[in-house]
Image (cartoon, rainbow, N blue to C red; front, side, top):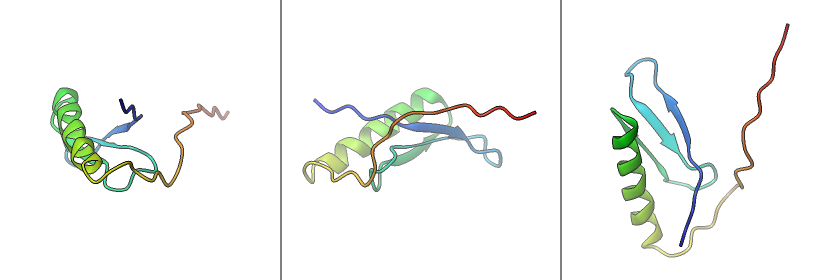
Length: 69
């Protein structure tokens, strides 16, 4: 079983949700809804895994909030 974390953003120009897996080349997609993005991301990742175990270029650690006055 594989598990990957994805970063999800909304494009201000198109309004589309855009997702990518940090450090996993080619693991990115978009969708009009979060459900569509999830489906698209799953399809892309499954397709990439058909080539074998991925060699991740980086390890996702998490997010951190920085506050400035």
